[in-house]
Length: 122
Image (cartoon, rainbow, N blue to C red; front, side):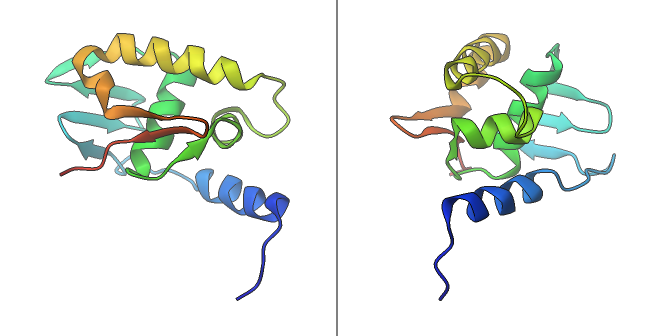
């Protein structure tokens, strides 16, 4: 089994996170419906207004429930590797996203010292 460098692993994850999303590739998990083609989120039957970054963040995490994403992987997935932003900016976006999702915000878990993940269905 080959040993991958951190840069190669990051590049592979970045490419995978940028796979084209079709309009029919909606995600329904827990009681959230995420529609990438419409850029809409329905939480508990009610629409949630999200910014571009908040939507991309939620979509990135929800596509792979249970997977832990580092802050830099999230930045790469949401804005690209050349976007100048601090890791703490991700934390601020997560706080805003959780607030907008209300009780549904608890599906976004903090993995201390690493990053974030979306809860898997039980």
